[in-house]
Image 1 (cartoon, helix red, strand yellow):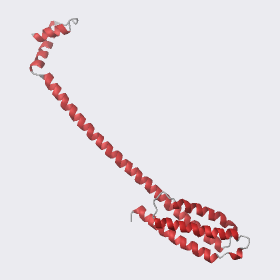
Image 2 (image 1 turned 30 degrees about the horizontal axis):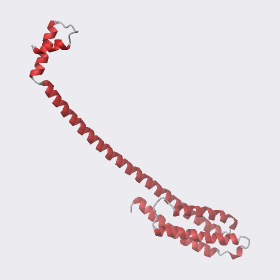
Image 3 (image 1 turned 135 degrees about the vertical axis):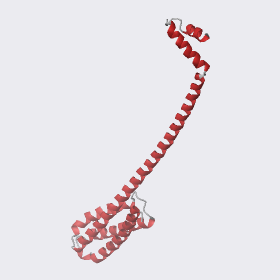
Length: 194
């Protein structure tokens, strides 16, 4: 029994009962004859390859899921920016309507503050985070220019209000409102994908 002798050399300090040693030696001999060690090594390699393949598939799926999540986050941010821009356009149009009403009522002392407010809104819209076309930017810029012109005339004529032409002012503002409504409709169409 060569296996038994090798075992005794490897473990000289460990006393073992004779009966246990015989069964153990027989087991080791059986493993050697049937080449179980070789089969175990091959099985380990196969299991490692399967595990590596499963890991690679998991990484690819995780990457794909991360890319989809990133795309969804970008789309959500774009939708939020579009919604903010739609809200700002609506606020600007409402403010212009209020200015027209104040013109009709000849409430000139309140108007300079309203002009400043609407100019800020329009300036923000001009540089909106949503990509506006050149025509849309021109519409916003034209509304700003008209508002500046009206504001200058009102500021200079606060003491002599007879020079103020309410019909002309409101006609300019009405045209701007119509053009801004077209831009607003285009933005809403972008939102719903029409």
